[in-house]
Image (cartoon, rainbow, N blue to C red):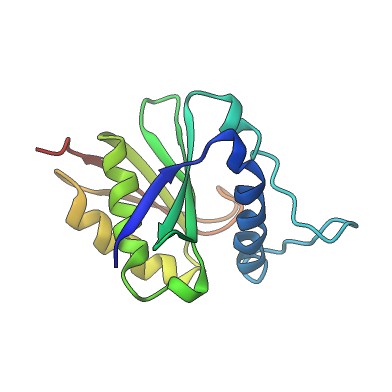
Length: 164
């Protein structure tokens, strides 16, 4: 399976918005997310990914078919954050997520910050081993819980080296 990670362009705004609906639907059972009166989940940062240079959205494709997306942004401390990461259910557990995540992380060598909701068991099993394998150097882990955070999270800080 060949996974292609393609930066989202302005023409992909609606596609990314549609995929975000599926992503937020999946998250609605972990966090108390409700739909708007129009029957859609709200995601207030979508436009920022098409207006701000420090943000990047990518679409994942397998044989030209859409398979997911990532959204990353530069933080004030200079690290890059994996803001959102999503693989369509049809493509999960086949290695697509791992291949896409590695490509996304390698697109921006340097310091990374990656947080995930500990109630999301799939993320808790997916991210730590992948980051440990890809990181060039130690992985620093920090756990936060309410009231210091809205929900229990694991935060991984690490560095990704430039490709040789």
